[in-house]
Amino acid sequence: MSERAESPTARDVLWRFGPMVYGPTVLFALGEGAVIPLVPVIAAQLGADVATAALVASALVVGQLCGNLPAGWAVARIGERLTMAIAGIVSLAGILGMALAPSLGVFAIAVFLIGFCAAAFGLARHSFMTTRVPLSFRARALSLLGGTFRLGMFVGPFIAAGLLALFGDEHATIWFFGGCLVATVLLVLLGPDPEKQLPAPAPARRIDADLTEDTGEAVTGSIPLPSRETRSPATGVMRTMWRYRRVLSTLGLAAASLSAVRSARQVVLPLWGVSIGLDAQTIALVVGISGAIDFALFYASGQVMDRFGRLWAALPAMVLMGAGFIALSLTHDVPQAAMWFAMFAAVLGVGNGLSSGILLTLGADVAPKSDPAAFLGSWRTLTDAGGAVAPLIVSGLAAVASLAVATGVMGGIGLLGALAFVKWVPRYVPRTRA
Figure 1 (cartoon, rainbow, N blue to C red):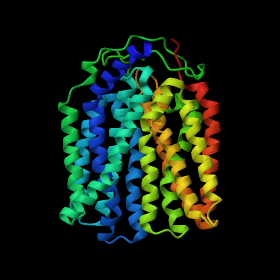
Figure 2 (cartoon, rainbow, N blue to C red):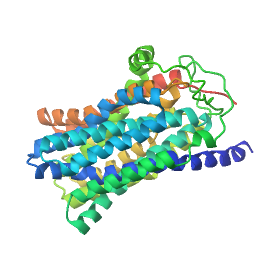
Figure 3 (spheres, one colour):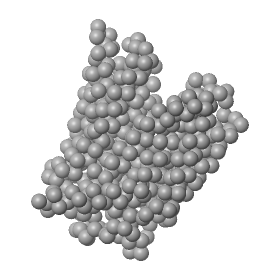
Figure 4 (spheres, one colour):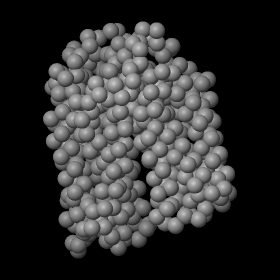
C-alpha cells in the first residue's frame, strides 16, 4: 500500500518538473548534440590541422570544467531559474561567435563560452532538483534528468545529419542550436515554476553525513524545502570547498574515477575498433549499440538507487566497466577480436547505463540542504576533471606503451573506484528510516 500511495506522488512531481527542468534539458542537449560532431569539421574549414581541430573541440570540455565554480557562486546568489536564463542568453552570444567567426581563435573562444554556460545551466538544474525533490524518489528524478540529456545527445547527431542533407552547410546545425537555446530561455522564463506549484515537503530530521551509513534499505523520507526568505546566507565557494574537503577528497574522488571511466569508454571503443582493423561502419554500429544499451537503462539506475541504496547501482556499474576494460585489453590479438570487441562494448554499455544519475544523486545527497550550489560547483568540478583527464591518460599510455595497456589501466581505475565507493558511500550518503 505504501508504494501504491507514493507512486502517484512521484509521477505528479516528475511531471510538474518537466516544463521547468526536463524540457530545457532536452532542448539544450539536442542543440549541443547536433553541433558537437561538427566542431572539428568547422575548425578544419577555418584552417586547423587535425591536432588543432581536436584542441578546439576540447574547448567545450575545458569551458565546462572552468564554469562549475563560478556557476556555484551565481546560483547561490541569484537563484537557479535566473542563472539558467542568463546562461541560455549568454550561450546565444557563443552561437553567434561560432556561426560568424572570422578566424579559428574566435571560433575556439565561442566554443569555450558554450561549455562555460553549459556548466552554469547544468549546475542550476542540479541545485534546483537537490532542494525540491523528496529523498524518496530523488535518484529516479536525477536519473531521468541524466536520461533526458542522453536522449538529446543521442538524437542530436541524427538531426545534424538531416540538416546537412537538407542545407549542405555545417553552420545549419549552429543555427539549430541557437533556435533550441531561444526555446530553452523562453521555457525557463515563461514556463510554470515548480517551486510555486509544489508544496514544501514536510521537515525531516537533519542527518550528519559523516555518521550515517548506507544500510542497503530503501530510501524513505523527504528533504525540507527552505524558502528563499528562510535560506541561510550563501557561503563562498572556496569556504565551502574547505568546509567539505573531507567528503570531496574521498567520495568526490571516487565519483571522479567513475567520470573518468565513462569518458574513457567514449575514446577507447572507436580507437579499439580502428586498432583491430574494423571499418568505420562496423565501429559505428558497435558503438551505437553500446550507446543504445546505455540509454535504455538510465531509469532502471534510479529505481535501483531509490529502492535498495546508492551502492547497489554504483558498485555493479564500476565493477562491470572496470572488468570490461581489463577483459577487452586482453583480446587485441586473439583470432576473434571483433566478436570480443562487440561483446565487451555491450558490457561497458550496461555498466554505463547502470551508472546513470549516480554522480548527480550522490552530489545531491552530500550537499548542504539549505544552500547546495557552492558545494555542487566543487563536486561537478571534480567529476568533470575526471572526465577531462581520462582521454589524456589513454592517449599518453597508448603513445608510450599500447592501446591495450591504456585500456587495462582504465579498467584498474574502475576497480579501484569500486573499492572507493564501497568504503565511502556507506559513510557519507545520508539515510532516513521509515
